Image (cartoon, rainbow, N blue to C red; front, side, top):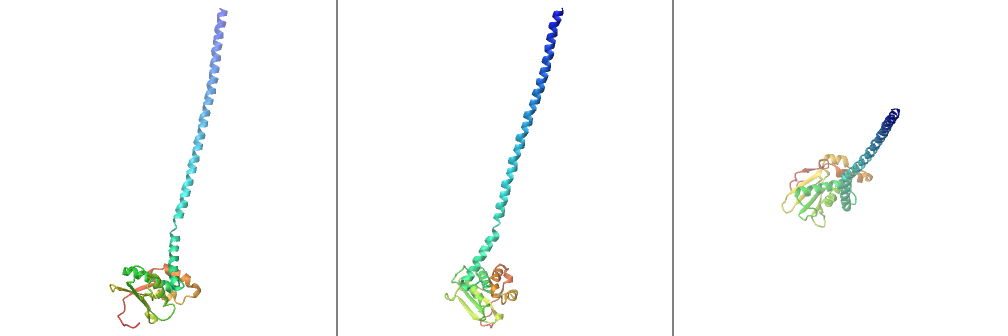
Length: 223
């Protein structure tokens, strides 16, 4: 009987020992199971890197957007070309020559004529006084009219009678333009060293601040 009980006790002790080992093993496995979970956070943390990196193209796109605002530069280049066209005829691009250029471009559009058209006739009325006569060179730069083509002429007139008539020969349609009062007051007798800056300024002004359209005077009327 004691012998049987001893064997049973051994079996009981083995079972208890097995339960304790199994528990420890389970705890060990449970503790180890948290390791992948803890490790799993690493890819999540790492995943933020591409998201952070995505902002770089966005920032770079802003650079292209800023670069796209090249409008002012293009506008300045176009102005430079117009000023050079005036200077090529007049020797400079002062305010009165540029005003003549502005008038000439306006007249071509009004008459529906292209530049250098032989259908255009330009008559500039002015005293023989540099400043007022400079308008004629501006008209030549804008329209292509010239003394040699016999479609540009200068008619002597008083300072009050300064004006330019552009006529389409084939139809008789004409437009007469003169410097506005505001232009005359603002750009009269500009110092030589300020002529270039003043010419650039005139190129950017609204038409109404440079010239005005007037009815053509009756033939033979004094100016």
